[in-house]
Structure formats: structure tokens, C-alpha cells
Image (cartoon, rainbow over all chains, first blue to last red; front, top):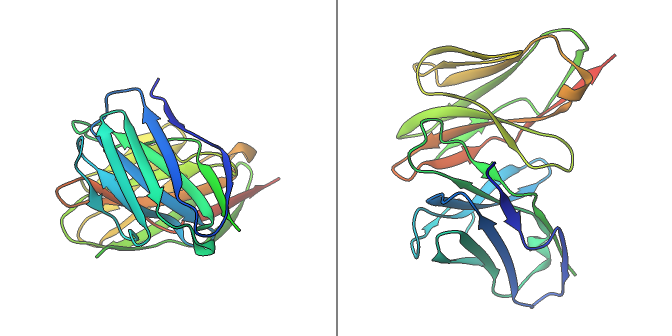
Length: 114
Length: 110
């Protein structure tokens, strides 16, 4: 079974703090993704990576950065957390050679910025 | 850019059939996927359509019309456990970018 794990289920941070969200997948997938999910807005893509050290901006990259130093790990960084970044953050991975483009999601991290 | 439209909420009776529609606008279209998400859970993959027509997987079927930029998810013999949010998602561009709709919250009632 594919397993995608995220470092925390719940996280509370203060405004201005630097926040790291970690995601690890164990199935040697090339693609990894970070989304945020907010009520009424669905899942919105922040960044994705199709290979180690490669990254592409998604639809809402402002205020975020990412790092992918190893194939299995994809980190989302909030350089200076703000209250409007309070959200559920979901990580996903997918293999390149998959006809269905199926994405496998982690359990999510609910981040609260106070 | 990409945009998708799907109803925000649908209510249906246990044992009945429900259809959740999705229309999209995108360039470099590869295909349309559907995901299910229960409250507090992670989204899980249901189906993928790259070609026109109907794909059936048990009680769930998914349809795509590329010329109409339209697809739907059909759930038959509804069960209470089908109460969840259902997201359509388009795959487009050279990097398999996946863009999700806002999701349809399905409530199954007895």
C-alpha cells in the first residue's frame, strides 16, 4: 500500500513564525504536491514537484516555498506565517507512469496561525 | 487557467441513484478524475476518464464528453456510507497538474 505521511495532524503557530510542514511518501513516486483546503474553496494547489530539486508554482504560491532534496520528502515552508494561512494542508504523491494520474493523499495537517 | 464547476450540495435517498455533474475549462486537457473525501479524512481516488464515454467501477460510474467539456459521477444503490464530498479534477499540462473543483457534499438520507 502507498503511504503518505505528514509530520503533524494539528499545528498551532504564532503570526510571523517560520513554519515547516513535512511530507514523506514510501512508494518512490516522482510527483509530489501540496494543497490547502478551505471550506467552499476546495483543494487549491500551492506547489508541486516532479523530481528532486525541481518545483513548479501552483495556483496560490504566494507566501509559501517548498524544498525537495530527496525523492521521498517534500517540505512546505511558510516563511512568515499569517492568520490567512490558517487552513488544512494536504500533501499528495503520484507516479509519473500511471495512466490514471491517481494521487495518493496524506492525512493532512490542520494549521492554526494565531 | 483552469476552472471547474460542480454543485456545492446534493441530497439523495438511500438506495437511489445520484448524478454529480462537472463542467470545466482548461487548456492542454488530459482527463477528468473523481475523488471522494469523508469528513475528517483524506481524498481518495475513485475514477479517471481520458476518453469519451462511461467507465464503470462497481456502484460508481464516471462519464466524460471532451467536446462538451463535461463529465459526471454516477452513484447507484446509494448507501449511507456514500455521504461524503466528491471532487472532480482536471489533469492538464505537461507536468500532470491536477486542478480540483470546490467539491459536492452528498448527503444520503434514509
